[in-house]
Length: 213
Image (cartoon, rainbow, N blue to C red):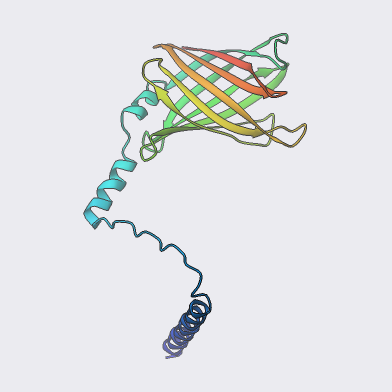
């Protein structure tokens, strides 16, 4: 009985609150007759079957996910870094273990190696959004505390994916754009190029040649 009474009280309060809101809206409307606002355009409502079909298409892996699945395995990575435009390159190596997760919907890569003599660990994810028709890439590592997020599309003609994003420069705390080009060279070779911006100009800051074991 106590629960029923409490429920009735809550409903009554909600009803009173709604009445007050309606009254307030009426008063506001009367006081601002001279102000005309555009009415929101109502979206066309899909029936439940059409909505279910759309969600199923959104959740079902397709050809772009097959492209990611082809990369499952272990890759040796030859890495080259440029810390300044036209600067002296620094080389390093790492190993990437790539797998598909969550029913083949996302790609996850784990990197281990050394950079400047220090142990390096990194993790990336790659997703293809069936709704937006775009790829999204994320990357984190043990050499920072931020996450890099980039979005782009795959070009079948060049067999490459161009991804663009922003990162915060820890030196000045400002956002700076970066660009990544990921190229499928052949069945066992991939090339990843990273481009940063310094003094208003873009320059190539990293290149990774990946060879599948």
